[in-house]
Image (cartoon, rainbow, N blue to C red):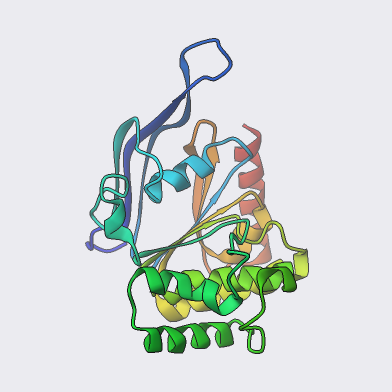
Length: 253
């Protein structure tokens, strides 16, 4: 960390939802959560289903307003100033969320269109990202003609094409087979290193979190930090085994 202001800051954030089972009252998905993410950092958030990972993700992306506390992204309120973040945040979901009526090229082009980038410049940027993600020759294919891995490559290209300063990734490789997911994970890490983007990566896989490197937080329910560590390239397998054991302990609590 440096003295530079954090890219993402949670200050005593709580998010509650009303119950829909007729019993009245509400339930907390996030409770008094505080953390900061530095510029250029890769943070993996790990936790069991229902621990509040996705709610935290939606608070970062401006889709939800906290019940109490404060969320700031690049010094701005992502919920109140949602439009300010257009082009500054890229999102990769578990589902590729491609538009079936648009080709691979047109799907990657979408964010650039919305940001009113000149058509000629859009074509140059899209071609570059499709090439970097191994999709040359598939520019004019529609999503139904692409494999799951290829569709997710298009989704990643779409996210990077707008040159976002922050990438939010919600279990982007969990629906893929192990080999494809592992390959894309390594490519994703390389792209982050090249672009310098800050990244938040939601996952439920211990091994995926370890392979991503960077910083790791384990959530307990409601979303609170049960365990946190930094993963370095110099870690030995013994070190990783110790981290695995601590993660498992935190998940079992």
